Image (cartoon, rainbow, N blue to C red; front, side, top):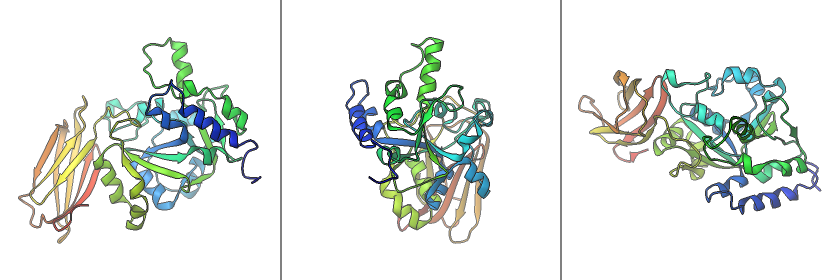
Length: 332
């Protein structure tokens, strides 16, 4: 037996198959047991794909790398220090934490200082990681007193996956039931120090515009490596999609059309930057109190060389879209 695997690791594969057949899972949820989920901001994911690994919070601190911290500083402060030495994955998407921080939010809507403006979800092979002796799992939220953590197969098999995968609203629950469900929905998988991407199966974006933006942030070699495994969550099964984001963008030599996800949120500081490829001349469009419409159309009549340009769209300083138009090849 390979010593890197847990004793009895074969039971994990059997358990995953059993979970996928449970009738209390929806058709979409039946795919969840085969994956582990890492949720982060788009620019962080671009760095992860480029560097080839996810680093623990402590490793990031040691290297001095600059990342967008999507977590609440208060929650991190009250999480035991030792867990900062692990890369942390979830058994499921759409956790309560993701609900709190997902999406570009106006300043008054940001809760607990937690904010992930443009989210991307990475899906890893669950069996390949859970079978490793070095992988630990928790039965719930790591900052809650009494949480249990273990690396044994039997402990993994004992986890209450009917609660972990529960995806219904909380209105039906008492306060104590709500706290119990929240606790277990945050069950985690812990990988020491760093996690390479050998078991990364899919990269999932909320929209085609955000997928395009991710590709623009990647070196060509990295983009070509991962573009076949990068998808858009058209069924909104991994995201909540309740906040403002750009769904798609039409680029041409005459105009730019931004198509927005509709939300009740208003009053952002909006800024569009356009750079001509031929001259590097820059053009700007800004609105201080911007309420995203269904479509925003910007004409390019004042641009000297609209046949090739790079465009970036920012909401409250957060990059919401970046792409290039080249007349000879269309949208990049």
